[in-house]
Length: 213
Image (cartoon, rainbow, N blue to C red):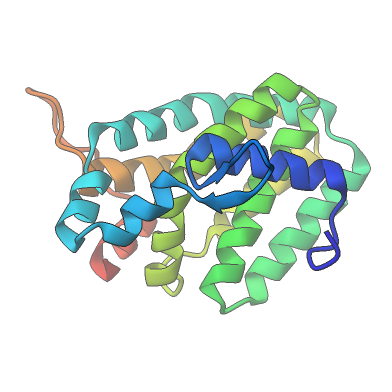
């Protein structure tokens, strides 16, 4: 708590989430240890990691995100408070200037988490966080390999403007466009189209990511 500057409740929630993800285990004596998820990743070969990224569940998660987040943005536009608008503006400003992929990744996560907070719906906020946690390894990989080609702050700006205007329809559309780039990237690179279907066309952002990776 002292090192991270966070409260007991935040720390407890973070530990519970890591336990749920299998990143750590907590014994009855409250001792924590590296969990099975981390142990497996340490032992995994490059081929196994590639196979896990191409699992169909990844595309399904991207579809879930594309269905939920635009509606969350619309709800946030109707409920967002001024302090959260200011927080989003600060995040977008930081993303414009950073050249550090790790920082950009975390700022992107903060941007989406703040919009979820603005919905004032704890159930929705929790669902969005679970999906974000499950997709975060791939998103981190995208930022580490593709920061020069992919600037999420450019896509965040229309979302921010819609939220400031309390325009639910514009917020929904802007978020759909933003999430769509990620969804198309997943569909193009980590999943095979169903029989009779064609892979979605890539946007400029997705194409840049594909070329980098």
